[in-house]
Each structure stands twice: as structure tokens, then as C-alpha cells.
Length: 277
Image (cartoon, rainbow, N blue to C red; front, side):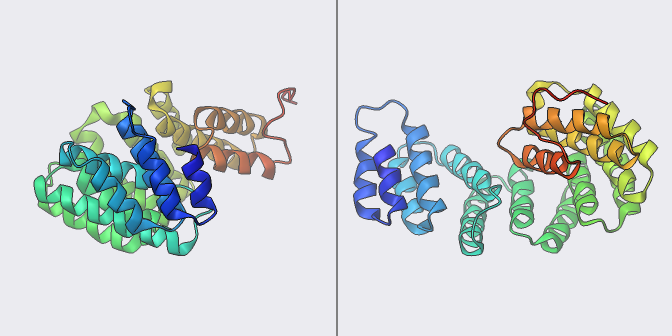
């Protein structure tokens, strides 16, 4: 498998395919190595070869299961900031194909529907995702998660913030048990409105309902809180929040954003000897 990765990086695709297939001989971790090989090929611009390998190696598995895992793998790749525009576009198209196949099997599945919109977000097509979420809400107005996702997208776009607040508060009324996610969205929208105290209160309430098991969702909320308290001039608290976000999501988007904010503060994100002033 690792030799196959090296061969792909040198542009030797056919020898790499042989190595990837050989790595599965007598190997019980078929999923792990197939998805790893698939991601490596896609990451290096060989989308069709990656898709062909995936479908041939996992042909005996339940189709919905392997398409679901393939879509998740593509999404993990799309979160990488250094992808070229061409590779990002090809990966986004492939994710769209997988999700379209999944939706044929279950047109109302919440995860499949939201991931189609999120693929558009990761490709920089925010307006298309905004329209898609609005359409999905019309189809199933009883799904509070859709309200929250559209509200959060509006917060990221920094447009129609008041509409976003209406949406997320509706989601909270419908599904208060998901307050960990929805309160963070509400807080971030309040931050966009310039209500730093209100934002801090809501995001803090979100974090109070979370645990380390929330992973990057927790890191996202903690990062948001760091931005909010930094906006109030509380540098030491902001640093502590950014450090924690980086700990929870060390290799993900919010870990990277948190470390960037620490550098803007003129501090070292890896300095273990730092003490508050």
C-alpha cells in the first residue's frame, strides 16, 4: 500500500494499482486499504481510476454502504485547503455522483441530502447550496437540521443574518435536544450582527452541552468562542480557546483556523510554556 502511494506521487499509476490490489491479498482490512488507495489516487488527480478501483474492489459489499463511505472519504479530501482547483472540482463532481446514487435509494435521507449541499459549499458554490437547502426545507419542513444548516450557511456567507436567526431558533424550538449544534449557530449569527455578549452566551451554552466526543463540532464552537472573546479584547481567554480548539481538531479545518488566529495574536500556537499575562 505505501509503495503504491509513492508510485502515484511519481505519476506511475499502473504499477501503483498493482500494489494497491496486492495489498488486499489475505488482508482483512479491505475497506481501510481500498478507501486509502481511492483517496490517494483522487488526491493526485486520477479520479476515474480511483472510482474504477473503488467499484471493483468493493463490488461484493452492500452498495449503499460502500457509496456512503466513498462519499465521506471524498469529503475528508475536500476539507484539505491546499487542493488544486482542478482536483477539488473533480472530487466534488465525484462526491455528487455518489450522493445522487444514494438519493435514488432513499430520496428523503437527511444525511445524503445535506451532504449534497455541503459538497457545493466545499467547492465554493455557496449560493447553489443556499438554494438547495431552501428547496430541501420545502420538501420536508419538519426537519429541524435543515433549518440549522441553512442558518449556519447564511452565517458563513454573512448574508440574511436575521433570516438565519429565525431559522435556527425555529430549529431549537423543534429539536431542543440538538442545542449543542444549534446554539453555536445562533451565537455565530449574533456575532455577525455585532452582538458579542449575546454571541458569547449562546456559544458558551453550546459548549456546556458538548463533550470531547463531539470532535470537530466542539472545536468549531470553541474556535467561535475564541473569535468572540477576542473581539471583546480578552486576548488571554481567546488564546486559551484557540489552543483548545487546536487540541480537539489538530489536523482539521478548525484546528488550522485556531492556530492562524493565535499567530495573529503574535503568539506561538505550539508554545507549551506560555502563561497568561
